[in-house]
Length: 248
Image (cartoon, rainbow, N blue to C red; front, top):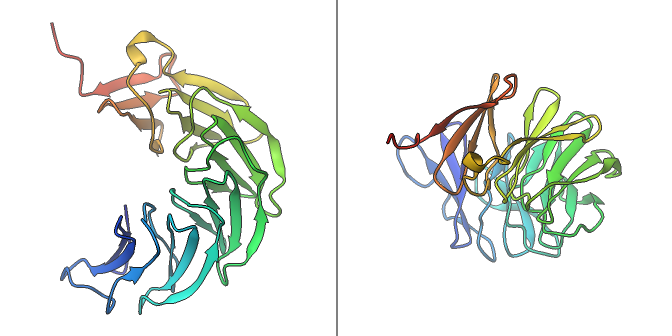
């Protein structure tokens, strides 16, 4: 994916480079792309002065937005396939070493590191107030304090690997899994409820991207080329599926 600011698109590539392109002219903004040591699968994050990106070469990079030169880099100790989160001057990034790491965005120093979990931390973390919420490929959801990384509630087991980050709907997290299930989870205590995927007509493939929340509706895409609209205020939350089933 790409990030945009002031008419400039920033994006990484499997060639290990990060690009900055003027959207109006389609011309390069930097003298040359920024080069990392391996593939860049993540979506860049931006603040007023910098581009932040992860790479499969184990590093997080801070890049000057104007010049495309390196400000700092930090070695995570393992590849980071997912996108990092930028919130309140801190970066949160998961790795295949099964940690979530919190960095100071100013200089890249490590503030804290989570316990080692049972699966990769791939999906983007979600920061809400004083908590950071994320999943791992062993099907667990985690909630940590942004201050020091201590748990806010015990890890919660879901059915299926959690490959994408959670979405926020009011005071609940919306979480999809690789087994094709969608859950709501209380931010306050982690209480979970299964809202999609348990009936035969809801077997539509894995959920590998973050659900989209728009007002009272939640949109979920699946690996069987389906988009599902959910309304949690209804007894049966499934509003529609696209494309619809063929008429017989």
